[in-house]
Amino acid sequence: MKIYNSLSNQKEEFKPIIENEVKMYACGPTVYNYFHIGNARPIIVFDVLRRYFEYRGYKVTFVQNFTDIDDKMINRANEEGITVKELADKFIAEYFKDAQGLGVRGATIHPKATENIDVIIDTVDKLIENGHAYAVGGNVYFRTKSFPEYGKLSHQPLEDLEAGARIDVNEDKEDAMDFVLWKAKKPGEPSWPSPWGEGRPGWHIECSAMVNKFLGETIDIHCGGKDLIFPHHENEIAQSECANCKPFAHYWMHNGYINVDNRKMSKSLNNFFTVRDVVKDFSYEVIRFFMLSAHYRSPINFSRDLLEQAETGLKRIKTCLENLEFLMNSYTDGEITAEESTLLENLKTHRSRFIEAMDDDLNTADGISAVFELVREMNSVFVNGKQYSKAFASKALELAKELLDVLGFSVAKEELLDEEIEKMIAERNDARKAKDFKRADEIRDTLKAKGIVLEDTPQGVKWRKAD
Image 1 (cartoon, rainbow, N blue to C red):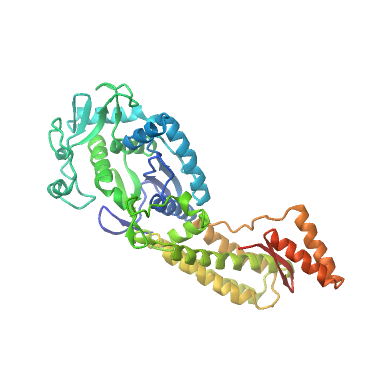
Image 2: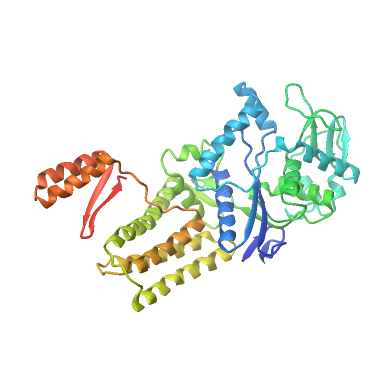
């Protein structure tokens, strides 16, 4: 598998530190609100990365943190008249609701910054001891110029970064580019005891400390949004490599930006959408399908038209598989024939194309194209009235489900029918057999009003949820 490494700005063959194991870390959300569609993209993309590694036989330890203490958390908690912890608990729970809806599996570990203060303090202390940090008035700052490689991820020398950065004037700092590791307590803010007085951690040091605690001093992959390259990830590298005197991460993966109707998403433009906003009109699965329909490094435009296209594409795939599951009821038992074996081998070529795409820097767009090709061929094979063995049809269905599972899509048919509706369908079948078509039509209309659409086929009655 090749991965585009932001550190080298090129695709590289993935070579894990430990054979057949992957240690990966993704920066999680700051939990002061529902997460927005920009947050959703890395959450979905790197969930697929983890799934694909597992599909290829790797043991994956995946850590995604929650930032549950920072200025945004404090300000929002004050606005709502609740504690920062109450705010964090609320939106961590809401995060899991949306993540589950999007088909995102829980990380191996979801650490919270506030539960790892001791590790953070130890890391800051180590940086002071080795001369890379200094304490002033209860604050602790990282000495940026003490790390000669600063800027290696953003590929800019320190002087250029300094010229382009928004820097707060602070007389306590030795240098304008130094950044805070520990913040002295302010009135009304949560704080923890430390060797430098009561205070709280800076944002960047939280991730460095949690990576070190849960994954070790050097990890395989660190991932996140492109917007985090500078200063967050740049600072993580500086802190971690100065504290441990070892490389921090071998591969850095960053997803591209999201625009809304070809404009940057922002509250000022009134085009800022949370995932919770979008699912009022589209399903979680449609959002996931939309996000994966483009290569993760490419910018992506978020619009209603494109969501509708994603909805249509996903429905086409699911309809094919649901039709095949239904047709299987009319197929014969028995072993796969020679002709069917040849057809199955042809279908498997799409698996090879899928793997080839995903091995090429997690190209989910081409991976989905391979799934569409498989579905198109399955339609041509099965939707022709010809009888096949159930074993052959089952193998074809398993192949499609295998690839969709890697992408995080469930194809299990939703159980919509309660006992009353099942009885109505049975009554309608009896009415049709008795040629009482008026009664059959009445039952069909009643079911339609309940949101159940019936379709009569040579193999029997199919049902589906109304659009």
